[in-house]
Length: 459
Image (cartoon, rainbow, N blue to C red; front, side):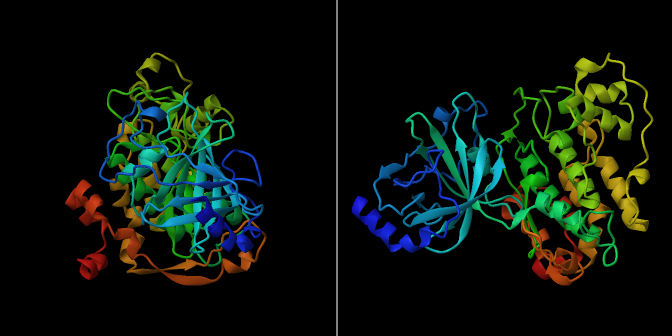
């Protein structure tokens, strides 16, 4: 095996110098190791069960540890792994850069040397003190159009034999919603598209928000709670209009008798029941987070930007007013006797910047006011959200919509001029419900969500 591996390495020596960063299994950079994964995890797509009390040792996988060889000097940070999709094929990855820091791990952009394709690899230290559900959750959610796709996974060891890392190989998209919003803060679409302040054009808000709620509908039906929905965890391919939810490091499959940690979710997007310390919350916490994201897509700024957990609650109360005892009980019954100062709610019409009027404004206000409510059980369910009139423009426009041309990168570019150019985007992919979605959802709700033009062309 070592001789074969050396030949593979030698045949690609000219590629290694192009990498800006080498893949680091051990947690530091080193020029003497290559890592060969002789097999993949025992990946069973038919097993959708999750033990909510799992530990690393109880996972239903065989952790196959990479073995260290002694390659030529220039074989830096290359590792091989048998492909999940093609079990007999060995792929070699070379990382080029760090593209993010997800929950409990670092995410690398890597190139498959055999094909030239790019993937994302999330490397997570397997601390035995904590539960690691990310791979298990991704297996449960596999192959949904609005969720980042899992390609393969394997364990590797660090310099110390006890240091174990899980490497999750996923599809790599063009960037994140967070990147796009940062760029949009320097751009105005008002001359070309209806928009709110420094946010996205309303048509893009609808396009991307729809896909967020489609992912949440699928997840909630499977009792999976993401617990960290925010712009950084929404990946984009701007040219195709596709959005995918990523980073399931905080996710958990919620079971009826489980106690759940309340100190979770990034503060700006944290549901009020979490701030109240609820340990029996539902997937409605993701709906709240998504509502906050929708507002941010429109305006370019967070809706609630508290400096602490308590301050976050104050910001929420400024908008929604003081919660009554019933609402407090719905969030956490332990606080029903607590006296809150009396604050009158702020009308939604006052917090939406100028730029959107008429029917759009009416639908936006109704949509957000039914999502961002104190009582978790009264929030709009994700499937109902997809059927809301806020998304009717996507259903009545036909299979194509006109959107601005968007490029995503981290360098200064001619984004200001690009935003005034448009292209036609086919949106059939919004309504291509998978067979699993059809099996999980009520037929009536799919009928309500799907446009007539799609039903006629694709039945």
